Image 1 (cartoon, one colour):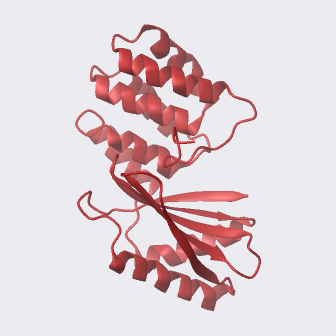
Image 2 (cartoon, rainbow, N blue to C red):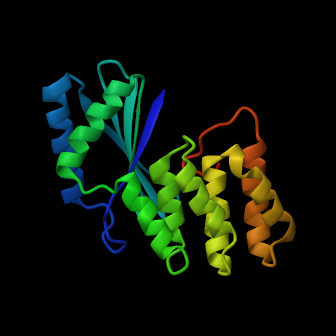
Length: 212
């Protein structure tokens, strides 16, 4: 199954609105016209006080799904597209970008570098945007953040690495889990380390992490 995340440029005070839902529906209408893929709205789900999800499924094959996540705890609004074929993901991305303002990976990297110490959540946004495939530049950003003097930045970096489960950062994560001066950072690093060392690896949605 191919998966791609799309981090929306919604401001934190602008959660999921009817206008956003309409834009998604318009993009899916265009997708149907271009490719024959027909997504229909399935349902919504309130995970807890901070996280709500909305689902669309491709009704012909039932082999593709789009999920909209509104997570007020970060805060972030993002989309997850899952499909059997990579070309379907590319078509979905093309149509979504015509109607919705979405961060590119390069924009997320720049945001994380610039804001990690004043807005640690920017590291979680980068983790979402890069998905689970290893990216050397993003890896260096997380590595630098794990060494930040700001404990909130180190916490967010450790959490982000756990979401990505990149083995390349296990050594640094293990060091943080063992010796960070902040107990909360050590705890989240230990949780993330366990996820990174698990086998087989399973991609973790940021909205379901810790809620299973």
